[in-house]
Amino acid sequence: MMTETLQSKLKHANLNTDGVAVEFDSNFPNPRTKLIKYGEINNKVNLCPIIIKGSKEQIAFAWNVGVGNSTGIGFGSLK
Image (tube, rainbow, N blue to C red):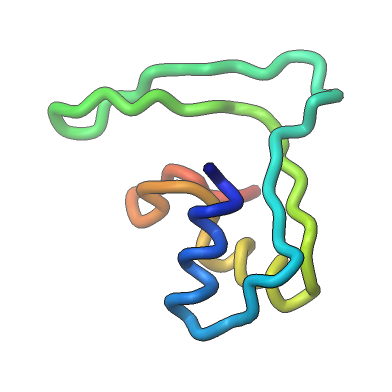
């Protein structure tokens, strides 16, 4: 799902989507899932590293816009 969301954002920005992929780091020892309330809505979030594969331009784009949904309110942001 994260790959498809990033591809959609890349398309919207008229950037190439070929070869881009996003996945959770399966080697991370302690991934967490948490419910965070924003307004009246509970959002299920994952707290763990991700791996982004793609061109330098695609990866830089992901750093700037985030990965996943609701990036405008801070979800899906990268640090």
